[in-house]
Image (tube, rainbow, N blue to C red):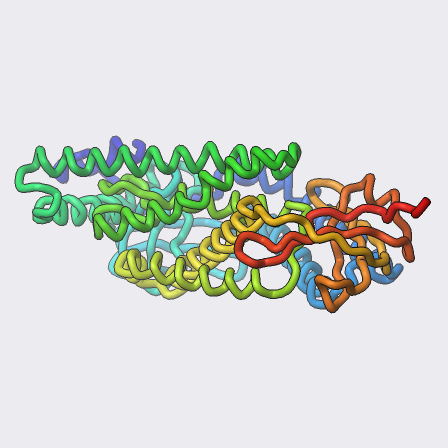
Length: 427
């Protein structure tokens, strides 16, 4: 019995359940854990060991905070996979007509049905919501999902169905959508098509921009992608303001309202990625200051529109995670938008000057080897600046070499380095 089939039954057709049912971790989950956890644990441990050796050799990882954070993250991943191997052997879920017994790594606990708010499907996975738990309980890795779903169906409410019923009630009494059911359905249909079109435009532009940032590095492609991506969040937030409570900026599977979360996610991440991978450098702190200001405004507007839906989650870790994700995406969009506008809308002439190379280094990134050159202060910067350069430029330079550097003023008055090249010898 699947999700749709069972939830569509009438109350009198409720399934007959045994007195007790016990569920072990599904075979596919065990095989996945046994297949991938040991090599991944070894890989993360080896990466940590390699990072330590590089730091001890003095050839990288000089930032102590980044070094400590990376090692702590890798150590956490090693511990996570080790615990996962134990959990798939010990985990067990037992249902009876009084409640459920959940056995984990360190023990078992009993939860009465009255203490479970309900269940819902998300992305094809089944979750239960114990009232005292900070996080929902993922039940998708247990065997016999049909019977497991039947137990929940008979004892606790379907939260998705409750939310859809609440949305249907809201729509029925929302005269802003029209007076008749046909008018309301037509108005919502128009909003869905508009939001869906904006989302698909964001997907296409984000894919193009990410592909260009990773492999092509074509300025025209970057310009086109940025010109499309920057207004997407603005358009979605404006739609949510104009059609208050009728356009969602979050995502809830099966919602009756149009949802713009995926378009916001795609455009924000793509803009941030395009800007982070661009080899040009900005000078000064003005970009960071503008980014903080714009991100605060964007996140504030987003939270203002969605706050009632965010509060409805009730669990403070979920609320905190939701707010943090909004702030993160707003920051990515703000920083990426300002960077792209400042660079691509800049029509100023480059100002050339000369300086010297004081240090050179390479770093290994996911996208390949990156090349960095530090230059001494010059007219546009009172402090040494580390610049990202191409491999060809890096190979043509050396410590102490004289270089020519061009700086543009930027469309937003944020100066940025356009080009670095070896200084031509005078004849």
